[in-house]
Length: 519
Image 1 (cartoon, one colour):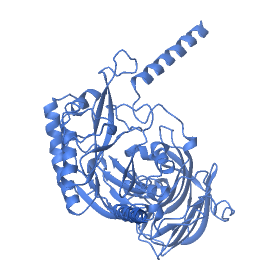
Image 2: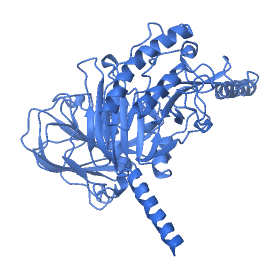
Image 3: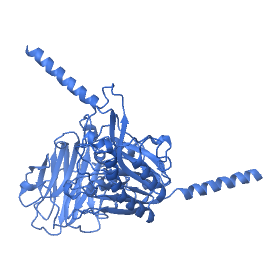
Image 4: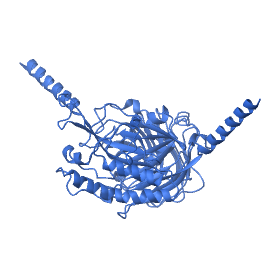
């Protein structure tokens, strides 16, 4: 009886400890960093010069990490390319790279900096995490030696990867991710397959990917759907593109569409239109920053749910085509016209009246809009539909319904970038006959601002306003990604040597066969 009571007491005590150690919320920090860039990125420099530049950037990151810890943050995300910049050749980036081991090696670089060779950057980042008792995500470059006799091995004998590392509050390396979808990054190689990297904490399960990855199914969607992460850590060097792909606009929409927290740290470079960081919850942005006026960095803080799926504010499941497929196209609209947003040809129809119901279709997609303006300014808005492979690369299949402000009253300007508006809407309801479950709801206001708490997505797939009239609107969009219709390609940026050799060999074979036929 005494033993039984003791066992019961131990069990109760264990449950109490477990409850205390698991946090319902946590404080997150992200830092938008204005990177100190090297003078020359075409010519290789010495390892000492490379380390000097990286330490200058880490000096700035250190201040942000210390500030985050002092404010009680448990984790901080720093941007992609934050330590050395982005425009390099394969040869020029090499002095900046370190060999980053698999986290399974159980390594605290701060305590054992020479265990895996020359790793001063990893050691310093580890010490910053350890000395400030905070999780730190940083983006650095990894190099992995390969056998030069292997045809897949690059000429310099190393694979080079754009890499995220995470150190826990003890300075231990707990995660390493090699970016899969590269975007014009000839200095780096593409991993053989997408890496699905997660790690667990007392404040939720985390996943990691980088920048361009967010536009593809793997690893981004797989981490959420199959690995059930609570929060994504997302370093990026994101160049803003209106009207759908400004950082704060698309990233907040992705968090809502996927139902996870998204912690975004963007690089800050006004000349390249790089700005826009945020802490986004599934139901609404918690904090965001967009600054095209200064060259200053910015740290953001927010309290977020550790397990958002358990939160009473967690959005309900959405059937994105439920409403749109049950109604007939709205009658009476005037003829539609074609126009371009970037390189994508949309079908548009103009919002002629102060209020109305419109439908515009393209291929399998029909977009329906009901709206009421507070007063029609001397501005033109259109409802647009696009279904097809996006951009000049024609790889990603988009389905987009959008109400967008035209640059001027000339309909030929519809779809061109515009960042200011005067027209307010008392009501809007946008829906579409989407064939994909992956739809991201966007509302972007004048001067590139979000609209937290001013819109919602209904269970039947309608994007509607709430809580009264809006600030002047630039665009209201439902941005769909039909991943299964994507055109598979070799890589998101640069292909590895083996694939290149295969392509060249295949082309030579085709040419040879053509010559034989011609003879």
